[in-house]
Length: 103
Image (tube, rainbow, N blue to C red):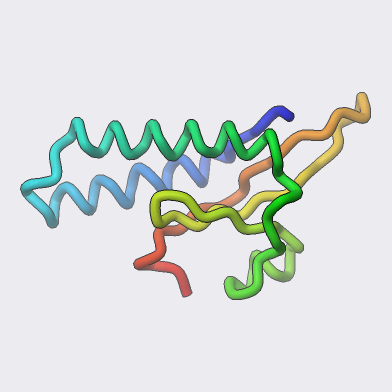
């Protein structure tokens, strides 16, 4: 199944790791790129079994939207399974937040 990652998700990930590198001088750019690549690879794999994960229960705006929640590398991702005009299902990842900021 195709996976669409919202620009907001990409920005959240980038902003988190930018701040992490500023605060932790031992965190290298190479390590961050590796972590980000694992995140994006994992999100692509989400398209294989998107119905496996439960609906969000804690983040109020995610609950109201009826989005599902997927956790990887300490990031929580909000997504939904959608159907396009050709009746093809796809996964739309709407939001992301690191566990340290998740409330």
